[in-house]
Length: 404
Image (cartoon, rainbow, N blue to C red):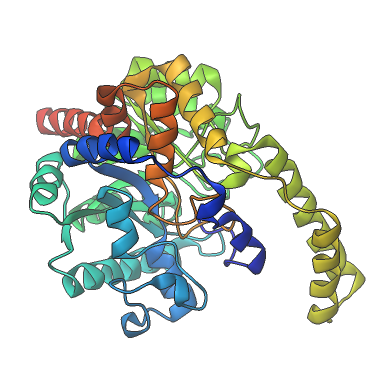
């Protein structure tokens, strides 16, 4: 999910010195766990960021270098992926709310092409995967398994044939919608029109089960979550969502839905976006967005004056601290309600502006794992979080599709 370009203000959340680094003993434990079960992250918006900020020009984005030096800086590069223990990544192929119909379809195919070119550019680092066996095989080869997750059902243009074509193109999950309610499903961040899923939306879920495409319920309304869980015969995922009971953001998952995920066998992959994991940050971010609109209204046609007004407000109203403790609280809440078999990681790197201290790039997973070790987590349960649960869900979806 792309919610804004990286700003100078975001740099305050990219400060590893402020987070407690793993001790040598913790680091050794993390390395043992990751060697057996590398991190499978549910959502990374690199494709859209390269397309939007760099015109899709891969010569301008060297993932083998330090992408923090780029303008704008990126959260993702190979050194940090390795430091974070990432062995498999769902690369988002994203549909912004402004694109409709076949324009949305085209944007997804362009990003699939972009990600395939990135994979081909680094054959010793990345390899395409679309099954659980592919993921395990590629991880064992020392490369990062690369999967496509389509963020936004607008791109199927109300057409199940296009849904099937996206699956043939390698799309392994589809987020039913993004920031807006569409013709067949309500969004968490828009006015509802269907009370969840429309009858066609239910057809979409059943067809996704049949063709082996994971149903992703991040971004949909709580009623749409409930409807999809009632319809789906395969485990669902939330590719990048956190717990509503901890942070009351509409993008997060309510407790009754977490209980349904347990019954369904699915997995909620925790988002690191600071306004999703900290209630104080959620309120500050909303206030800042309101002030940004106010400054635009006060300074029509004068972007510099509006920016100066917003900067003054930000100096007078500093953002609250967000730390790894906030993220770990979401992980543990999901475990309490849904169970340790139903939690994963979906950080939303390169798709958000604000991140917790010390977790400002794809090396941030190690900070979280160290915190969970301090909280008494066992190695086997950490392995479920890092990738074991997602592999189980994917294998279950493959069995159901194979039986259709």
